[in-house]
Length: 97
Image 1 (cartoon, helix red, strand yellow):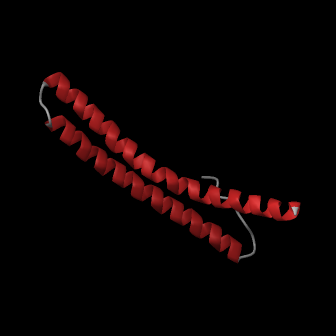
Image 2 (cartoon, rainbow, N blue to C red; image 1 turned 90 degrees about the vertical axis):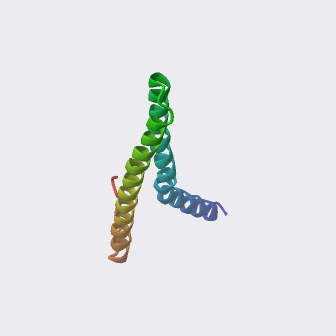
Image 3 (cartoon, rainbow, N blue to C red; image 1 turned 135 degrees about the horizontal axis):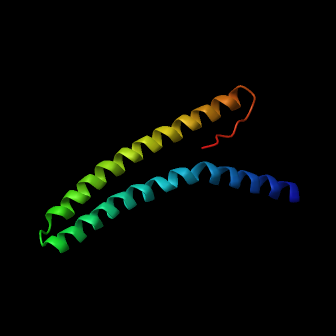
């Protein structure tokens, strides 16, 4: 029975290692948008210009966040493709990124 549990644990660990980078994508996007929105809100409060800096911060944050999101997804998909090609060729290679 311990062999079955060991294999199951390794399988779960492997799945978690593969899924974790994708789980971070949403957080990365949200933090970028909220951070630049907060900067815009702060500037609006200091200059009494509400809501223009907030809107600008949210727009810039969305643009930067979405661009980073797409780049990260592309990088992850390329790493998955290389990993799958390695398995098809009979060797497993871990991606250092």
